[in-house]
Length: 304
Ligand SMILES: [Cu+2]
Image (cartoon, rainbow, N blue to C red; front, side, top):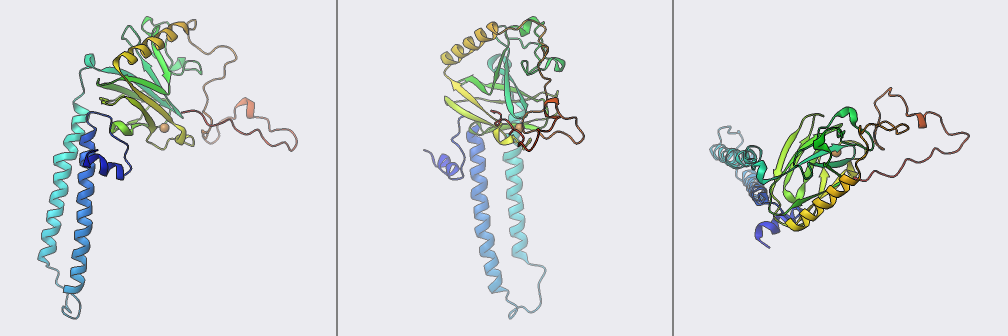
């Protein structure tokens, strides 16, 4: 284990599994050492001043201190170098230098209270059309099954597989509130904001394994359960998974159009969602339980 990995582990960070992650680790480590040095330095300076400039020796304050002015300037300079010289270029590289789409895996990730759903284009390599009017409990992404490109699309809840050593571009969107697609092991996180907008992020996994996806924005009562996973497979395992999901997608094709079937409840708020004030109560909760029977307990937490 390198010294860098050790100190980050002491800070509680999970081991890095992405190509660019060491750069993030490096700047986090440098910032912590720098802040530690500042803490010790300022504390020593404070103690020195208490003794050196005691009131018994200096009854009148001197507001033109030369040492502190130089020290403060030096600290501001170092912090400016950290921000402008390291942090901003690193951020700019992440948001400006995307890999070529022909070399990368392109996936759509959709957040909603309180789970993640992944959408892959299937064997034809083209994403099918999605329409918000087609969203239902059985069609969470509103995939238009009349679109030929949608017929082989793969929709997986919660668990995404990606190949090792290949860039992954994730286009994020949200169906309700602001979520954040956070992959701590990959040292990457991105907000999924305004419904309808698509926000891209990318990373390149360099270690096979199963890694946790969490929601990095407090998005409601079930936020804690909004988890998923990214499984980094060898290329052969990834192709096998892709084929399996494509076969399942082909078998599970429901007759078009994929609209709500009679009797299927409309897509309402998930368990744990607080409805807005004045919102009508769902029909099955309109009537209070008879007598002194306690109300039925809400269903278990949704699986993220
Ligand atoms: Cu969330």
